[in-house]
Structure formats: C-alpha cells, structure tokens
Amino acid sequence: MHSISVIVSATALIALQLLGSGILVSAKCSFDKISVDTNPGFQITVNDDYKLVEDTLANVKYGLYCDAKPSNVDGIDKWFKVPISAAGIRIPIASGFVEALGLRSKVAAIESPGNLTNICFDTSKIKTLDEANGAEVSNVDVIFSINASSDGAQSVRLPSDDSLLPLQKAEWLKFFAAFFNEEKSAASLFTLISDSYNCHRGNMRNLKTPPHAYWVQYSDDSDKKSYNIITSAYQKELLAGAGATNVTNKALEDPSDVVSFQNAVKDASYVFDQTNLKDYGQRITEWYTDFGYADPRNTDVNFLLQRQIWRTDQYVSKSGISNFPEFAYVRPDLVLQDVISVVVPTYNTEYQPRWMSWLGGTNEDSDTIDQSNYDCENSWMSIVDQCVARSDFDGTTPSSGDDNDSDSSNSNDDSNKKGDNDSESSSGHGRTGKIVGGVIAGVVFIALAFVALHYYNRHRRQARIRALSQNGYGHENIGL
Image (tube, rainbow, N blue to C red; front, side, top):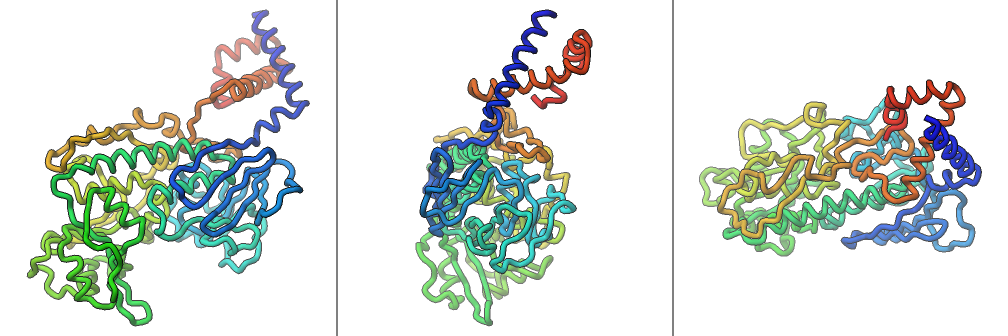
C-alpha cells in the first residue's frame, strides 16, 4: 500500500511539472509526417511550425499551424489554425470522410442537410449553410466545397468529378484529415483500403473469359439528346479492376447518334448506367425509351436479353437520394467488390453489394439507410475486411466467399471501435487506437496519475486504494 501511494504521488508531481512546462499542452497539437502514395493531386509537407497542404490540381496552398501563425512564410493562399473544431460541408464526399474518421462532432454547418444520406448527424446541432456567395460564414472554421473560392478564405476544395482513379480519390481522406490533425489515422485506414482494393483487383487478372461491360449515361439537357459511353478514369478503372474489357477507348464522336451508341455497346454482357432516371417503379421502361430500344426482348444484344443493366443507387436515403457520392468514393475497395459481384458472380457468392442495384427487374427495390443497415456506433465505413490473394482464380470455380473476406476480427481491430464523437480530440473511426511509443504512453500514464492525485486530495488513502481496486476507476472514467 505504501509503495502504491509513493508511486502515485511521485508521478503526480511529474505531471504538475510537465503541465507547468507546457509539454502536455504542446503534445496535443503535433504534426505527423505521412506519405502520399497514388499521385492524387495534393501534397502534404511538414515543417517545424506549420504544415503545407497543397491542392496541386487547383493550385491552392493551405498553411496549417498549431499555435502561432508563421510570419516569415510566403506563397500561402490561406491559413488555418488546426485542429479545426467547426467544419462546414457543401460537398457529399466530405460527409464520407467525416464518417470514416469519426469526426461527426466537428461538423457545425451543412448546405442542404436533407440532401445528405448520413443518418448519424445530429441536425438539431447543425446550422444550414446558405447558398455560397463568396462571403465568409460565422462560427465555422473551414467549409469543404466543390471549389476553393465559394466561401472566401474559409473554402477548401475537395474533388467532385471522376477524373481521378478510385484509389486516388479515396486518398483525399488524408488531405481532409490534415485539417483535424488526423493524418495518421487517415493513413492507416487508407493503407487497409488500398491493400484490399489491390488484392481483389489482382484476383481478377486470370479470368478465362473476361466479361464485356460499359458505363453509360443518357441526358437531354437543353432539348439535345446525348448517348454517352463514360470514359472517365474512375469508371474505366473500376471495370478494368473487376476484370472487364471493352473496345471503347474514347467517347463517341457524335454522342447524339443513338444508332452509333447502340452499335458501340452491343457486344456488352453488362451495362452500368448513371442516367438521371425519374420514373421510379418504371425506370427500366424509361431506360429502354431513353436509349432507343423499342423492342429490347426481340434482339441479339446479350445484355438486353439477360437484362444485365445495373446502377449505383441501391443504398438511398428516405427521400431516395443515392448514398454513392457520399460514402462510396471513400471506400473504393467495397465499390470494386460490388462491380465484381455483378460481372464475376462466382468470385464471392456470399458477398452482398451495397450500392449496385439491378435495373433489369420489373420490381424495383432499394435499401433505405436506417439503423437496421447502418450502425452509427460501429460504422462499417472504417472496417476493412481482409482479402486473400487468389492467383489461381479464373472465374470458373464458384467460391463460398471465405477466401475473399473475413469478419472484423481479421480487419483493423482498432478501426472496429468507434471513437467518442462528442470528444474534441476524438480520433474516431479508422484510427489505430493503440498507444505507441514512449511519449504517448508516458502522457497517458501521467494523466492517470493526475486523476489519482485529485482523488487523493478528496479522500483518505485507504478509501482511494479501495476505489481503484474495486470500482475499475481507471477504465470507466479515463477511457482506456
């Protein structure tokens, strides 16, 4: 008993000395050096007193600092004190990044909250952003937007088109995390996502009969009909990653020519569509009409005969808004598995796609996001199942699915537990959670000692020791 009290008292004195010196305070805000791996269009450079986060696609440089803004640095377009505590959202992918990192409590404002599908936001505590007009917004530190000038000095751009490859777009998670000093957590999660994506992609390399597939879209803007084969980097890589092939290397020369479109896709076994269909319940009929297929059942086109027309709007909000641009861009490993489940169904017969919906049926169905399929306290956005390399897979041997994914015990263990979203310093989903290194372990130990000292001053020594041993004091109140 005597030795315990001596240790507690000694460590408490050390804690007081460190607090006085400012060491514990400065440890709260530090910069982690991470790599940027896929050439996604941004760079992060850590300096002594600030970090440079550069959007190389938009040519915008952001300077992020902890304590005092550096006075001798040139060429910075915007400065932000980090970690930020109040973020605004004008672009769906930002909601996905928030969810993956467990940073919901940092969201203070959203443009059109009803257009987001994330059911975990407490909208009673979130203000609605007016339409951007170039002016700054009060009580918000940063506004993540489609461009870097929508809200003046507060705006930070995130990618909004499909010119980036799936992994490139997902790696912007690190860019986003830099404003919350959560780069290390983001890097850990992205590594798991990237490894899973590349593993599943590698398993599609030896297919005996690669499927033919296209990504298409119809539009009639300004009374001009357009029939498009989508050749953006994002869609083309997803098809290639799933082992699919096609003979279209560029968009149609005349997208208004429906006959040219039909000839170009007639070899397809599968078609993925992202047309803005409006006639819910009759969308397959609408699709046939849009693309000029008057008699789709009397044809020699395989994907029409087999009704292999797919979309990415299976997972929707109560108002029917697709979750894809919000969550899917953050998890390309899951999107790739969705596509594989369509074009190579023998790969994992137990896999249930999240976003892919079959348009070929007469009974249209979708999954409305609610607590039955999305657990806000244990979000799958930060849980990455393990993929096992299968160099012998050729597409002909059905799989039970055991070789391709696993339960959460084989994924990032620390990503399975949700961080405290109400805590200002929450690391959230995807954070490794393990306290590594002597410095971090020392800070936690000293914090425990500090609490013990406070308890010592209020109670007698014996009462304190009984509380520590009988009531699990450290675990319940400190959060270890």
